[in-house]
Image (cartoon, rainbow, N blue to C red; front, side, top):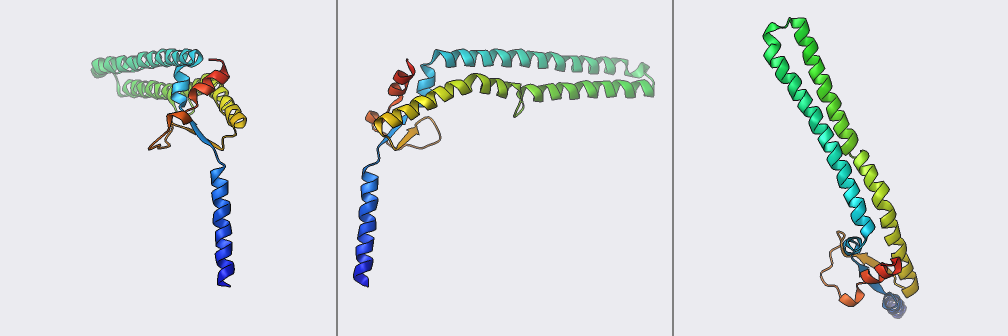
Length: 171
């Protein structure tokens, strides 16, 4: 009984080591790849332009709110309580609309996020396709991304296939 357990354990260890031995690993640096792509730089520039445009629109709207408040402050003594209430409501409504606009542009699923998805996702898809092509043609079991949260304490430069991915993409 003990011999069969030992034999079984030996077979499992042997099979595991054979399977591990056959695997090939590599890594790419997606930040490096993106830095070499002119399309990515152009997409980032477009996103920055949208962001600046929307930010200035929001800043102007906040200046309007501040101006409304300053006007209210200076005229407050001359206003009836009903007029004060209307002005305060108008100021709060304007401020709320500016906050909604800011959320629309810069919120979690805002316009900036959507623009980034529209412009960057096709580039990321091309990189992913090239990595898959590289993995299939060279029979890599795993390809890591060195620029992600994966911690690589040591990496052999011979395993860096970033330039190969760029080459497959035509760069």
